[in-house]
Image 1 (tube, each protein chain N blue to C red):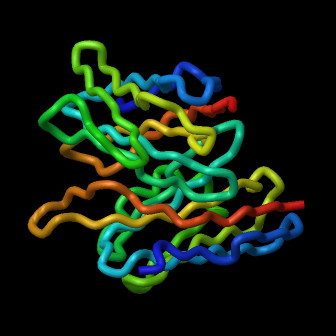
Image 2 (cartoon, each protein chain N blue to C red; image 1 turned 30 degrees about the vertical axis):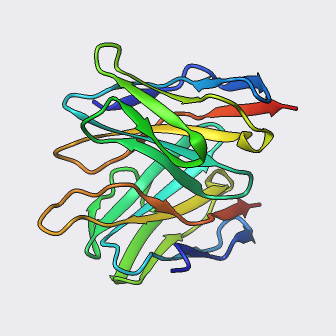
Length: 114
Length: 118
């Protein structure tokens, strides 16, 4: 069975500091991994994805994520946080073959403190 | 493209009433997904379509829920009769599969419909 865990409901970081939002996954095959962001009263927006290739993936708004197969993790990172990064972040996983379901984590609320 | 369009954006209804949520996917996309988001259960996939055909409806909570996709540019999610526990934000998302594959990439979400059942 596929699942995603986001162990932190809330992450607070000071503006200008690096940020990390954690995600671990469990799949029975090779994973497709995604990060989405949700701003208040908005739908989810795609940030980045890992399909294959380089383990470090760069995405929108200066975000990046590192795929670590041995630790089954896909943590989201940004070198310098902005107040405007404050939002709800979702990690999601899909197996590369078979069912097309996307499994989302429970979300992590990021607050960047000015 | 205007993105995924959902209507209405907000719906308030009374228990027992029929509710119909509407979605227009991005033109050219061949996958359409319906999700429900609540504080308690997070984001749940209800059903998804490929080329207008329902592929997996295992997430539909019960028979009161039904979804249709009569053509490539329109889908509906209907709740009849509605109950207070159906109150949630309902998202529609669409995606496309590269030619020759049955695999899609990232999904594009609509703004959601906030449903309140009194």
